[in-house]
Length: 241
Ligand SMILES: [Zn+2]
Image (tube, rainbow, N blue to C red; front, side, top):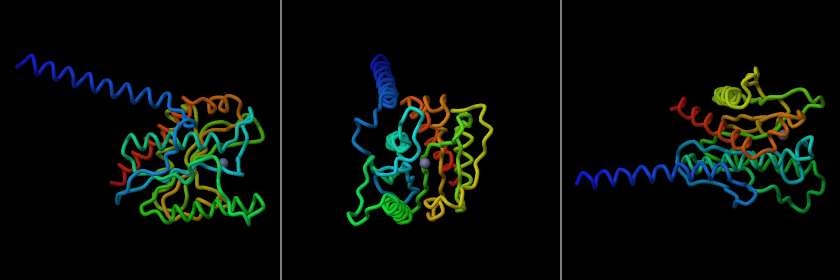
């Protein structure tokens, strides 16, 4: 009898160990380009994380020193956030599920197409009950020296709390010498000015800085960023309970 219990306990711990190892391997080798898009999780009445991969379609955003578009880095980090949300039971939606965006044929200019895309995102977010927005971006500056992640918050209640939690977590996990604090978002950021839910825009790093740009172009660093953002969101949910 005792032997059977011991055997069961051993099998149980071996199973737990296998699941943990599988989860670690999945997260380490998760390649968003080979993975079907994760667009949304199931429905409930609780908070819904809106993962917004900045730019996309005809709007590539800034370009890194090695020629990588910001939109691709934003999308990859967002896909990793979606995968982590799925694993941890966070309800979420994404504002885009691909690098391509379909525009109405009558919109011919890139500026009209960008406006159309931004409006669609605002409609989606404002139409989502209990939404909490994290918009993922990369920073760019004409000089190479500025570096370090930076979070910005909207005027809606709760945004500053989430932005501060994100900033503290990013400083601690990604850039310990970073002295940046969460800041109010600029008036010209249409998405954050138009949504009615708590909203944070994260500039994960400067793609104009050589060291940070090469870090951002590695899968492991993008996974680290996604993990930091999701853990800060979980802390935010804890503070709101
Ligand atoms: Zn951007």
